[in-house]
Length: 118
Image (cartoon, rainbow, N blue to C red; front, side):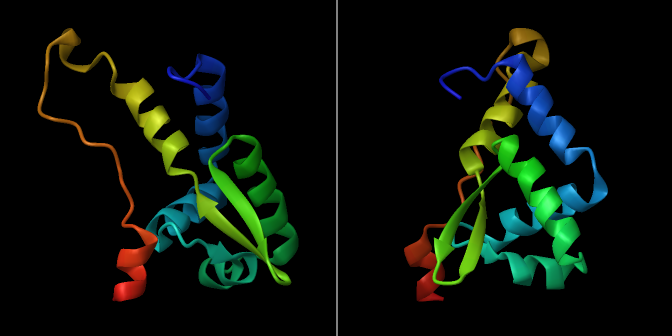
């Protein structure tokens, strides 16, 4: 998405999140962290049927909010923290009338190593 997120990309991301199931999926993936979650586990956790889940994941993927990878026979989905932070940055870049506000820190998920150490 480059340095500054374009308005069209922000609208796509916000549009994808403007639906209860997709918002729940995205929040679930943010909570899970950078290791992600198998599609079946997401469906179980949120009580979403596989056919509906597939549709919602496609919408979130097209908006750039989630990424997927194949691990054996499972598809693992992960929240795209970079895009999430770009959307948040876009929404807040002119806050406080352009004056410096309290420090804003980007959401940085714990490293995979830190999660495995638990």
